[in-house]
Image (cartoon, rainbow, N blue to C red; front, side, top):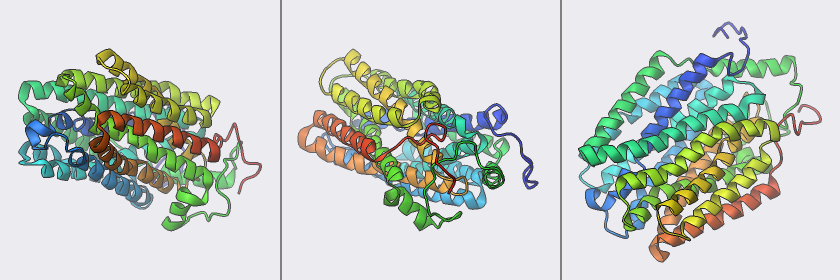
Length: 434
């Protein structure tokens, strides 16, 4: 497409390979940015940052702050990107991230870590939202599972790699200097690449909306009924939260699945450290979860383009919860790694396909807002989950926290089964367009 001219370039991954590749590099670097906070900082919270032993609520505070801020930024990013474009939001996200490594390096106490994580939440909400939305703009409906699988593969492989790399950097350079060097390198590189090479994809979304008016798609999506072409923010929020039961089911599943990630971030490193694991061992065990999750999304996203979104999502919620329960049942690096891998497999089934399901049944004219609000609820799960997990761990120990998350995931899977439906337009098309 030539921006401003309204001329169409075919939608698709191959047809827009250069920009899709740039967006994949961006989300890899977004994963690096969050991954640098996930192994070293929780494991060394007591020795390096002054958190008293057993203070699980204080330990979880930085993830609560991250989740609440990221959720709000997701909400803002989706709506803002429909007005000023995807690229400007992406660049703003990287600018906000610049002080984070310096704050960690200079931190005199845990409050500075919480403050740095607030900025990380802004960065992640703006940048990760835009990489996902941009790829959906550029590709066809029959590639949504694949492109979201590629997106989340790149991001969560970045998370896992950063957790391992920063663990070794902390061993060699010390926690603070290692995170400073790694963090600045990642953020500066990402900012330069986003300014120089990323192209705004908003014109593709507008072109898709116009094309649907001229020639309806072969398999009409099951869009919500009785919704204006350009609904208000409040109307989209209501649809995503309670008015459309399918979107409600997807939003609650997104919120609850973040309990797993909050658990892996806050409690898993502490659980392993208390059992005598070294920082590199913790990096590899926790990294198993991220690697399995990230790598398998190359398969599971594409799979949902063929078999649908519903069953991968329901099964993924149940399997992921089972993996977290297994962690509490055994001891040793092998057991923990296998349990983490099972949880990662479940996450790979559900993670790209919940987002793909939202994209399936929301029109391009307000898809950015819908995805932003879905991601608002999803990442609010970091905050709610971390607070609940910290309280459970304080009362019942770290093992109880794993069981709490396992049971919550199974309950959410049941809600998704009851209120969700197949959203893939080819497998469950609308009888007629709205």
